[in-house]
Image (cartoon, rainbow, N blue to C red; front, side, top):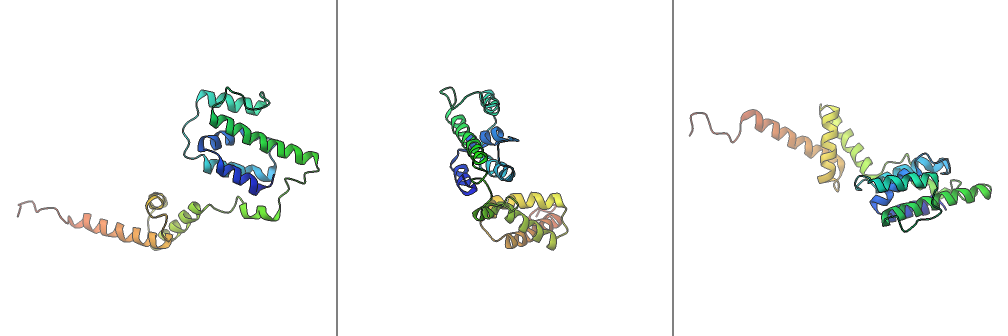
Length: 190
């Protein structure tokens, strides 16, 4: 299995299955070393909307890491079964590559497209917004981070440089309005 195939399978997993598979494959010595970080990032990204683990999920993770079940059994829920199957396919590919002289899992020219050091589109947007906002304002790093995350949700479709400038303009208008008590009736009334 090549990384592009693996990444395609990750995108087909449900969020809960991706989160489970991430834990099943975490620090697994059978996972190819040049895939470990990329797998972790891709699975975490896909599983970020999944809920918390149940005790049955934790049992399935432990059993997978110990390889107690040769294949998914009827006792697993659909997400656990999906994660189990994915983890087993990664481990099988790694074992097959070791038997064939590690030909199948060596990084290839297409794998450069999925370099784990390359930020996701959301990360790239956040970095560009933060850099621009820092350049044009004197806001603290925490304030910049809060504004960047808030803006990603509402303005993620826009150019991050324009969104940063608009955010600064809006914050300056808000600051001026608060400073001058605009819209507040005078103490003596009208």
